[in-house]
Length: 298
Image (cartoon, rainbow, N blue to C red; front, side):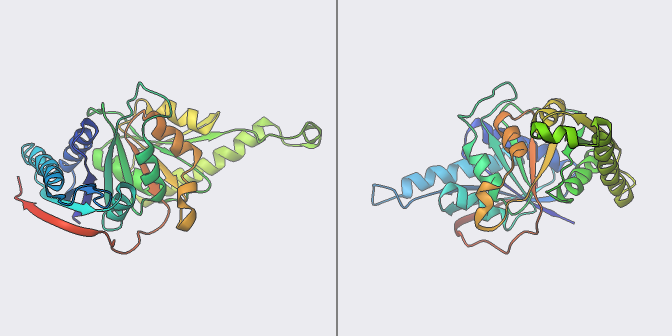
């Protein structure tokens, strides 16, 4: 089955990293690649937006050439859309099997200044989203997936597929903590730390066995660690080729429901991060498409 991949670009170095990640993926996946950019012309102070639009068209054309010159067997198209950036990119996710964007965050940089667009898109995406750090380079690490109670099986299924595609081991990571209790409740609590850990182990083993039964090719290892989930997963992600987490964002509240783990990973970018919504994609988008060009197969 041919995969429809959309990569959103703006001409910067983070976009180049996203393109390079897609090119690397295209070596093992049959895909149709759509390179898109989004421009909001409503605020333009000049009556003739054509010179500005021409620059955006140049950006997607150059991105298309970058892929073609890589000599991977992929059909490439370029599109320019009139929309505000976040709604325009989210709309692209409605017609894609996979959405890819770059982030100016690097694996060595932490903080809260950069990365607001990836966060906004991640909370609203209608298909799996991969955010690629600007300093990305190909690696041979494992695929890491966070095993969570709330985000369903979509993230684990996506991670298993990526593991098989890359012929890479899969680490299914679950972090656990004893819930905070008021002081008097500790005396009434009959279960000790060992019982909490055993319950978490049972849950993790059940999910891992589900993945093995779904596809015997998956080389999955269960990893249970005590600690804050975002810290545990970030530590494992530092050596990963891809880190996968789910999100339960939906409807009007989607922007509030990315989740702390996905948020923290996107703010620190220890590796490329895949955000997988636990729901089916919506229908085709409604953003106006103003130009399309086709680039021959490389």
